[in-house]
Amino acid sequence: MPLGEMAVMGKTMMVLTLTGRVLHDAVSFIVFSFLDILDLVLCFAFKAVDFIIEAEWKPCYCASAKEAITSSGKILVSEQGESKIVCLTSTKLRLEEISDTLYTRTSLVSEISKSTVNELKRIKLEGKSSTVTVQTSEKIKKGTMRSTLTVNSTIVEMLQGKIGGQHLHPISRWSDCDCKSCTSWTSSSKETLFVRAEGPKDKGKGDVLFIHGFISSSAFWTETLFPNFSHAAKSTYRLFAIDLLGFGRSPKPADSLYTLREHLDMIEQSVLEPYEVKSFHIVAHSLGCILALALAVKHPGSVKSLTLLAPPYYKVPKGVLATQHVMRQVAPRRVWPLITFGASMACWYEHISRAICLVICKNHRLWEFLTKLVTRNRMKTFLIEGFCCHTHNAAWHTLHNIICGTGSKLEGYLDSVRDHLNCDVNIFHGKKDELIPVECSYNVQHKVPRARVKVLDDEDHITIVVNRQKVFARELEEIWKRSSG
Image (cartoon, rainbow, N blue to C red; front, side, top):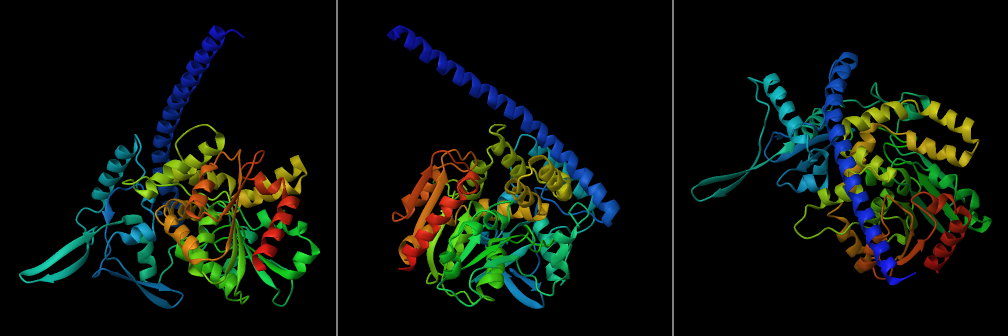
């Protein structure tokens, strides 16, 4: 082909690519502007239905006003009969426990919606004191200096229920599924995670903890890897696959904020303590990688190996708020690819995502039946089961408090893994992963140079396990054998 024609073709491709990007950005802008308005409409619709069915409406994060909590910088929290003191001496609590992305998501319509909600709230609460200030005092020679910390009003209301020893909604709400499988935890005397355990009845030579990703379940492991482990591995290792708090068959408390501490505490109470796990390997996928790193840092002498699949570690530029940066990386408000569009709706829109959960999760048995009827494929059915069996409250808070809220913590976790842990670190990532880019795995390797990264050319976020379960089972066995030697 003559050089002139090649140059013309190159310019044409550049123009077409640029045109495509402009069109995509324009369509994304229009679609998400519409969704901004729709989310506001659904906010009022859900409040009305909540009030009709439950005689009260669930507090949401639409309001921009930050209301404070009473007392001298502390909250008395009652949990299962135990009282704990949570200090509110700075905005550090919000960064460590509660992500600001829950109530700060700037968009074209957000300012209008926030001002509208605030005005209605002002009218409703007129004549009442709606804001209590958390004050800390520092004595100085001529008097007292006071500083104010403000906290989102929804968080205040949820915490106030615990402060008074009351649970706002300990069980399902009208928009959540109330089937036997989803509510079985309410009849148990112990609120522990659902754990699928296989292997020796007594303590084996090693234990392995499997942590699934966002809107998934333990079946992600038990339906793929567990049947494919060798007899030698099953007789050597105790295998523990959990349903995270709020997902699968685990408890789904409606008054939980699903913070990092809550998730870690439940893993410890459900696996490490009752099964007397002293040293263990961890295999984690996607969101589960964050919990795996936090757990490894908390138990530095116990972890033998870390196997991370598609870890969501985004480098945060200096001067940028980590939580907001991670949210925009995970959910960039784009209509394509579809998995990114879905993540954007789940992350940016509290009420649209609740409506989606109402349709999908409350009716998960119907979707499971239709999937079995159409595909007659157990592998695809368990993926649907994992995708549908959760509550909106669990998914919404876990997404923000774990994925977005730990944006400023992951670097410290990785530094600890590099400097203070001797465990083997292995990372797997699908090159076709459209949700979490491969760069995230290389970011982890940059922080932990000893980490081994394996990029699989033909796999994506799910097929990194599902399409290659037999091969991956052998790879894991080799990792555990190498790490235990």
